[in-house]
Length: 246
Ligand code: GLN
Image (tube, rainbow, N blue to C red; front, side, top):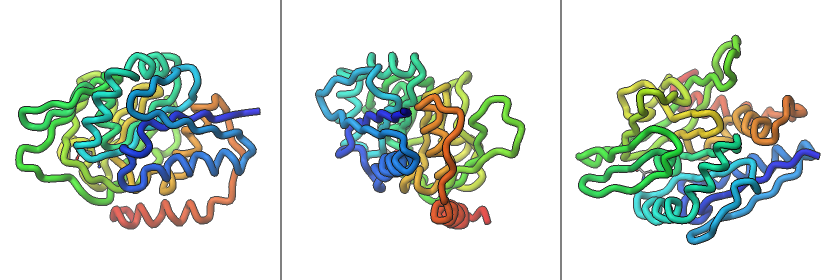
């Protein structure tokens, strides 16, 4: 029987904009299909087992909480997360969590260290201005896929501007909103099973198709039983409408 084992990193500290709703979404969609679901929380000072989870989740947070978590990530969890990513476990970072997947988050003269799972860095704007609003991005998750790209819709609110290294691929192309830096036209990052995005509010209830993609990838399944997604489709349509897409 299939099982999805999730490790929620700092669920209390990194949970801005109800990002924990992403975990509920994964749980419900697994349970409705008879897929076992287990979630383990890993907080400050707690080591993690890279082989014990299929998906590691790091939500968004304010600069202060982010700093606490960043130091702890680097000290107690970095090697395990690299090992997990190397064996293909999903590592999903949202907003503040996304920023911590990279090398560093620069705040003026100060700097928060990152995990270095992907080649990117984030710089807080000198004037403190934030990139805020509804956002929609166009994504292609499956290599070689020929159909039209899918769309993720959500909300962003970040002071940091994220810059991808030359060899790094974004998660998507900005249709509406600001994305990584407000000027690059890119949003998020995707390197194999490591995915980062600024979209929250939270991300998965507005994009059920993406929740299912994560479940499939994390569990190594080729297909999932269909669900009645009338409400989910309405939520997605509303998020697209809010972003000015339809
Ligand atoms: N503190 C980070 C920033 O402002 C991330 C904020 C968030 O997670 N919404 O850039």
